[in-house]
Length: 499
Ligand SMILES: Cc1cc2nc3c(=O)[nH]c(=O)nc-3n(C[C@H](O)[C@H](O)[C@H](O)COP(=O)(O)OP(=O)(O)OC[C@H]3O[C@@H](n4cnc5c(N)ncnc54)[C@H](O)[C@@H]3O)c2cc1C
Image (cartoon, rainbow, N blue to C red):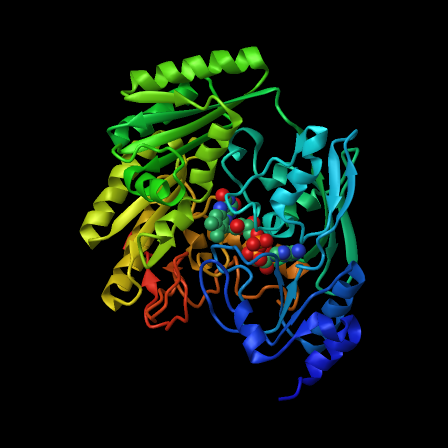
């Protein structure tokens, strides 16, 4: 087998060792953590902005799609090619270029792993705040593209609040610099526009981020409940008391039993739900807040409120939470994780609704929430070898997401739109909203070569969740994936309606 002319030209521009093209190598790049679609024509590993410019110029000349890739942990199909083309993997652009503690910022290449940045500045007493549960693997470039959040974004905001500037290679191969490190640049906020654009406007080659000082004190509480409703009511009441914890996470009984079996984090397996609550700041304020939180939890029938007494105990509780998706994979051949947002005051109602959906479709659903943000992650457990069950999973997921939109929430909180939910965008945006987004995209990506088929609805389908549930053997224990026959595409209603 011989490399194609496109591959030869890529090799000439970035080096032979920087290009994959054999089918057995490309297979690894068919996937993200959600789905697989088709293999790219080539995968290329640039080590510099100049390489990325060269790749983009070639793609333009040959009219070939280009899809950026970080660690491939996306849960919405973002780095998976929809129409073939070149995958640009940033795995070799992983240098921390500059750490400027005095000015509380760092400049990094996009392939830097999220947690590695915090580890690099830990000795100086600093960290990088956005902390997706995938932070041991996912890259800052991927976080920028998805505008990722995490447990601590309740207090500190999502990625967009921590990105100060970007270097971006545009569709035509031009290089632009957005934002500024030390002052507020006049003109349009291009950084804000690019963060969350899921690789459809340009390839990010450098990122300047804000570093935060570690708080003087941190207190982590675990509130344990016999009724799910008591836990969700606590969330609403905490905010009513004017308390914004640094993190406010919820797991239901299904989830915490799986987590405990997998991690031994110390969660009570006989309870219906737990809240993991963290407050941080000045020592005296933190103690006072922890006391108020405990009172509010007890007033809402928490049967116990535990406090992590040591850093080790705190780390153990977080290890359980951050490994929760994987833990559920141990008790089910496959699962499909959803990502919706609702006003947090409606959590009790939404949880009842999810339970009704589970019963109606005969499915087990584990719930993990960034409860403080109203960001839900129902994980629908199923066996991908059962075609009828696969169909019920997609229907159940569609209903849950449509309900989020109906409640005035969103179809995604942090996992992005990708190719999973682009047909659902009309549930939360008007035709005029979408038309303006299309025009902006056309200005940046005029030939549609950058990550085609993502984010905006194709217009070919109407209000459909574009997940294709695995029906093959050997389904993975992460999100729904595998080689997927596209035999069923589910309607979740058009124009905002329910099915
Ligand atoms: C177990 C698990 C837990 C997770 N928890 C969270 C969570 O708590 N919060 C959260 O927000 N997400 C979470 N995610 C989803 C995922 O980790 C995030 O979306 C993450 O930001 C993706 O980063 P990545 O490096 O893996 O990017 P990829 O998956 O490789 O790519 C994501 C998107 O970014 C684009 N992209 C990547 N690099 C660039 C670049 N340099 N320039 C332009 N576009 C680029 C890709 O084309 C794609 O559209 C979780 C995923 C898993 C599997």
